[in-house]
Image (cartoon, rainbow, N blue to C red; front, side, top):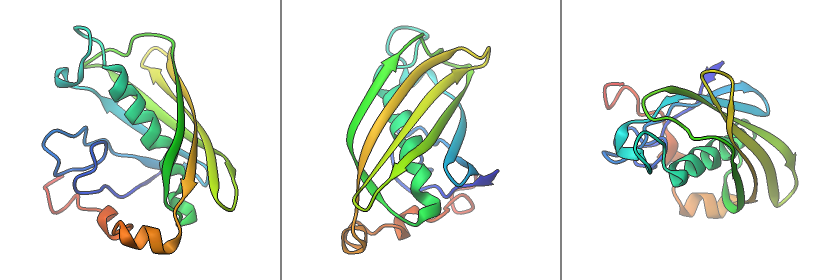
Length: 154
């Protein structure tokens, strides 16, 4: 597995974002990405349970990151999440994403969150609109996604 870069202020992976999740992602294959994560209590919905919005954000991020080996960038067009079991706070989870279909203007992928005991707690299917090189440049991508781990002491 190869570590993927982190951004500076992305809510999910930004290492300098004081409110962010600071998740780290790893490339498993050309089409698969994984993160191992333990959510803090500041991200709970019900006591002891990860907020559904945070669950969705993790799934959205892991699926979109399957594009990194293609050197393409995208924005979410659709995200459908199925919540199957509560995701516990303070316990390790695995977030998995897979690229399903890459077309000239769109990408489709799926993801899931797996609990330490192997229970699948959430699944997602998503569609992304690919950014043109000009659009990516206007958002300062990928320079804003440089690996800043050393800069923030990670």
